[in-house]
Image (cartoon, rainbow, N blue to C red; front, top):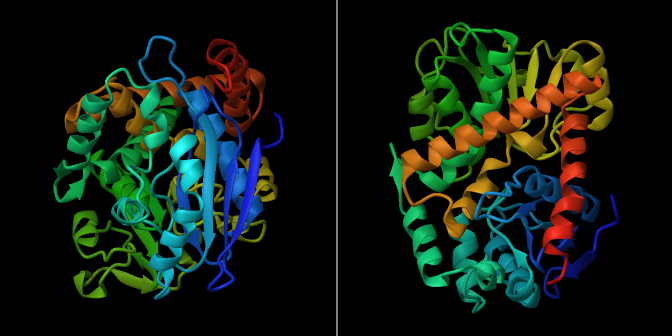
Length: 392
């Protein structure tokens, strides 16, 4: 694939902190990719995420659908989101990036930021929306914006639909892999690192499918129970950063060190927090049969090679966690309406089909699921470019 189309490094004039924007590719003059905030965020990290967004968009290309995939992009800010000055820094970053958001970068929440926070900062900068660059591509902008607003207002059992669709997609990818391997849901154990938006929703959907969540990790440590955790109680006890109030734990729940999630006895391991969470040393502790990448880039390439060599299958982020982004566009372009059941049904159907296609391709090519996903995306990108163009 080609080098990124554009890379921007911004230095805050008040704090000296840096922010980044990488546009990997444009389709019809527009790109898509969230904005993350974390201490230590780098330009290389953002570039890798932007390339991943290009592939996620291509993987969801459906010639019969209303949603036309966009190019890939990503934003990042090097700051702890808990820092007292984080919000003001976010506003200054968005003011600097305002011309890009207005013209060709659609964005939203990612690691460290919620959509509510992004929306508040976007309004403060005078922008119409974090996705306004896509509005000229819509057939009926007013109806499309109303659909998305209505969809964001929906809650299901106390959690917003926008927070749930990504986890629904992660869970469906995992279930598709289990089905292909002939593994029953009952008795299959799950460990989840991170109980924020993606990790929390994934835990809910896997538990409701009949799997047993035996361990979850947050910034305070790992909570484990071999008999199974009460996922709904833990979700209800989270703060805005996905940290669980330990007062909600039951007598059988144990508090373990923060890295204990790596070695928990489980068939599915779901890293759903930070990038680069599993390195070559960490992978030695993993006994799971599948790693399901709910986070972006959680497994280092060298670690994935070692995991693959000893029979652990890594289901890659470019497929597994792509439903959040796709749901925005399915809703905005009108493939689905602002309805939870319709959103979940469309997400499950699309994610299962994409996961199965990836696993079939991997088996046929004798390669990994990640290599298969990249091959599928590489096949589709020229078709998208030929049909829609980069800039028009």
